[in-house]
Amino acid sequence: MNVRSGFVTFVGRPNVGKSTLVNAICGSKVSIVSNKPQTTRTRVRGVHHTADGQIVFVDTPGIHKPVTALGERVNATALDSVNDVDVVCLLIDACKPFGRGDQWVADHIDVRNAFVVVNKTDKASREQLFAQLQAVSVLEAAEYFPVSAVTGQGVPELLAALMQKMPEGPAYYPEDMVSDTDEAQWVAELVREQLLAVLKDELPYSVATRVTEWEWPRVRCEILVERESQKGMVIGKGGELLKKVGQNVRQQMAPGAFIELHVVVDKDWQQKPDRLERLGY
Image (cartoon, rainbow, N blue to C red):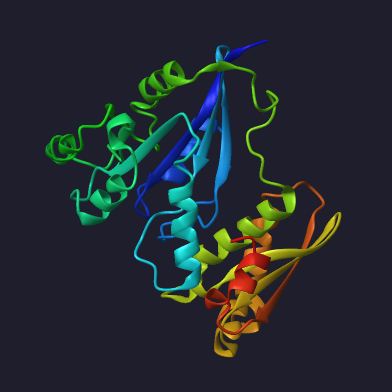
């Protein structure tokens, strides 16, 4: 049976709330989140189901000025995600002045046919929000939506407008499916999310994670760092930091799961194309 169904990509600078908004819309955690920029490194799809249809949301990495081969690939992933979708949504932070970075992203999409979504209205004052909406009006986008991914304010209006843009066709995913991320990749991302929460300074950006063994309920996950000195920082004094990460990840896995975490030094992995390929970037 045909319904309204299609694809929507969220793009924007780091930390504008793309992943938080996708999670809120889908009613489930489909993307990891943190307060650190560049948390999302790959395309993540989340599915929003209604009685009338289905919208597949594509969460993308924050677009930034790259300084590594990883950063270049992350940017390319985000920009490529605006192709072959039904609507592109440019997310803007309501609390930060519209700047050159936002304009750079806008210049790389068909902004006149895009929706501009001003997020984090729950944190912005009325004056800030009004100033931001006035600033982004120069983009002459198709539509503008002030929303809060945290409180849900404005989200129903955004969803209603997006659904009207979806073409008629078959549903792409079953009704009980909210993400197409496989389990191993999801566990690796959960480990990285917890590391982002506890590691300081630039170290989180030198960390990658991958599941190397899956013999349920035992799961082995490698944590890659770029320097021998970083290994001890990830493990923590007496292994406490790594133990805490494992406990927090296990709480988000199915009951009975046992996760083994191993820290491995892979020198300058961010600059090596073959390593990036192996890690799925």
